[in-house]
Image 1 (cartoon, rainbow, N blue to C red):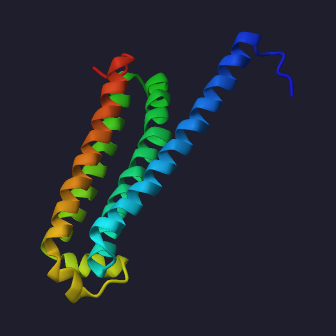
Image 2 (image 1 turned 135 degrees about the vertical axis):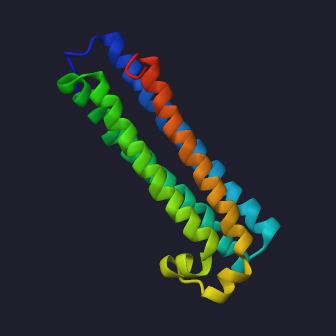
Length: 167
């Protein structure tokens, strides 16, 4: 397939970018696979290990979802609001959703800290007694989740600031 509208040097750069992206993705998948094997051999197979992976993967899933919403919805919408209503309205828009997401995450974290057996039993197949006996794992997972969410939002704010969109 020929793309005449892309100069030859651009096609080479697209091809190089595509190959490097696919190559790095394959490397990451291989490393993740071997990481799982190493963890399974070190930790063994038990309900506690399953719980650990469930907690970490749930935290990563929530963090990834909010990162995607932030990058795919909020940041582009920020630019549209800024173009139509000005920079002040765009900053207010972004801050509103930043505070809303922060409040929701804080409410979830508080519920998970004070009643983890009820919260996590509602979204998992683990029994409340088992969850209650491993309460510390859930507390540490909330620290991990909140830290990753703060990092996501601060990264987006810094990126917007670097392009001159946020003061």
